[in-house]
Length: 202
Image (cartoon, rainbow, N blue to C red; front, top):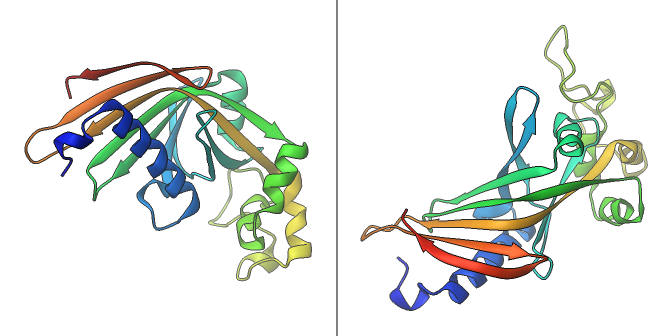
């Protein structure tokens, strides 16, 4: 339950970014995974991704991708993105919208790559590109890695496919579903600074 003292814009905004930051650091947190939406030629594309980092000062969220994945090409063509998060315990939904960039093969991605484990890197080691058609069910990984994690040395082969998606958030739609009534608020950002906020009907 959210108390009346917590129903203030500063308190809600602080909680939003605190929850997102916690999600980016702890797999057991509700906001560790979110739904990322992009625009393709055939419509809206949605997929679950892991929230890897949050920059509160600049209002940015970060996730990783194989550079060959469809979402990378979609963002490069149309940078508008949306995020959806849901915390079933707190009964809070967050919808974030903004613009994204894709970082590939630079110092920024090198830093993020260095912080990944061989287990994480396995995701970028598929030989066919993500979304490739297959004649039978398969992971796309080299056969020797189907049943084990790569060594640190082996995992470096995935670096050439590694990309970092950085979303700059322009708006957050916060919704709390309470037993004694729902509440909803909108926060708009310009250049990383809160520019406008308002209560709206849930």
